[in-house]
Image (cartoon, rainbow, N blue to C red; front, side, top):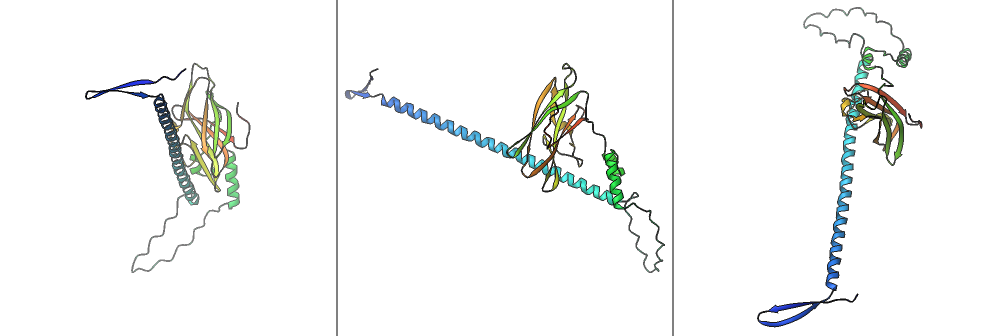
Length: 275
């Protein structure tokens, strides 16, 4: 196709008519400028999107670390309370003797009262271990804390568990299946606990992030992942490993009233999945 030129007429009242020709190169320059402008806008938008994703990831990590620190403080307080209760006798801590009255002779101290014989620490530790194996508690305080955890439920089940490490993250895939008819969906809340060790100390982390009790259970079960399953639904939990040694992953299923209906434990070294 032959190039065409455009004739432009410039008219002035006090001068004769003059003709100026504009070549097609002006159109090419305009198209080039528009292309560069669009490319710059696209590149800037992509950079802003990447920065937004990075900031969102940092915010999520900060929230997870803050909740983990709160859970660790709760566990430490629980361990301190247990140590204090373990040092107490059955009747409570001994009271200090009253001070002697002034300007009066101090009476002689009473004869020492024979203390009941106690079993040696080795025997006490063996009894505690046997009691824990049998699902019993060795002290009244532990008796209130220990309760049977259900390992199965007639309306819901956890299946196809898969643990995958991706960089510094641990991805936990699992299905929540409805064991009843699909016309009656299984509804409730799910929480995943990562039990590990960090610098030699026990570490418990929850997904979704929530505060835990000293026993390592959610304070509010209804803050877990809500589900309403007719047949089954796939879930994915993500944990940051960093310097943690993973021991096991626990799956806690609560009903709509917040009552524990199922507790399933998956060892970290186990490659089998619950089908």
